[in-house]
Image 1 (cartoon, rainbow, N blue to C red):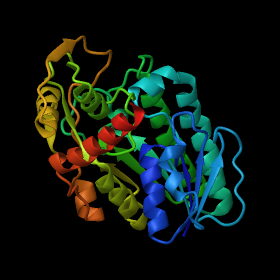
Image 2: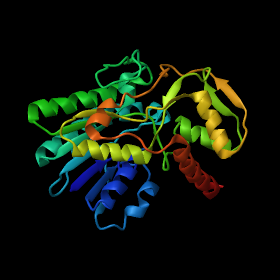
Image 3: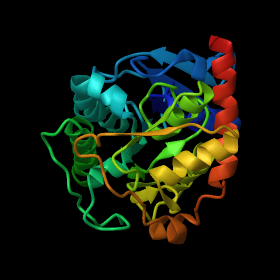
Amino acid sequence: MRVLITGGAGFIGSHLCDYFVDKGNAVICMDNLLTGRMENIAHLLGEKNFNFIQYDVTNYIFVDGPLDWILHLASPASPNDYLEYPIQTLKVGALGTHKALGLARAKKASFLIASTSEVYGDPLVHPQGEDYWGNVNPIGPRGVYDEAKRFAEAITYAYHRYHNVDIRIARIFNTFGPRMKHDDGRVVPTFINQVLRREPITVYGNGNQTRSFCYISDLVEGIYRLIQNDKVRLSNLGNQNEMTILDFAKLVMKIMNVKCEIVHKELPIDDPHVRQPDISRAKEFLKWEPVVSLEEGLKKTVEYFKNQFHHNK
């Protein structure tokens, strides 16, 4: 296959580049490096099947030759990033998705949009299944990301209905692993780095809000199975094991064998109280469910951040 991966220098995008190159596919990675990083794909630059193009996909996209798949992952994805780049986040969700779909239509390529559990907002239904429409504040600070992805899903379906583009939507729940940015504001890198620096761990609110964490290799496998399957167009991808943020903080300390103080801070606006995917659709049709335990995934992630930490000293 010949595959275009937008946002390919990002956390998830770079792991997808690895996966497709390893399977012998030709990969074009496109990224404007707003939040993506060259170090995530540096090891691929010598590969004959890998091409990197630094480009902003909110502009017209031109790619020479045929394409089988476009995987559209370009977008700031962490709270720190989308709050710092609100307009760019909205533009890449709207204009970027429009341009990428136009290219899919022109090349007769299939198209996958990396959507997010954030389309469910602060959910009133638990766990969240694909038929839940969500509870989102469009004008809150998080709305720039939530609504960008909701619009991206809507235009993706419109291209499917009106232009017959073959589409998939992956609603991605919390995912973690090596290559996350240490300062992206997400709970995994934040806690690991606070422990590495022997700082107090900051927990927002009382810490009883829940998240479920999926290791990156499981997610990438899920995305691959989704594009291989033509029975399902939309699927949640995430880990069903839900835990409180407070318990998660304790687990990180246990794995790193360090005791730190836990400090409580005010809960951010519109922060979801619960987050757990219903993955029965992925289990049934994709024969997919996560296999990497949270402990195992955390050990690998801690190792990555330790190396980064010593390297940056």
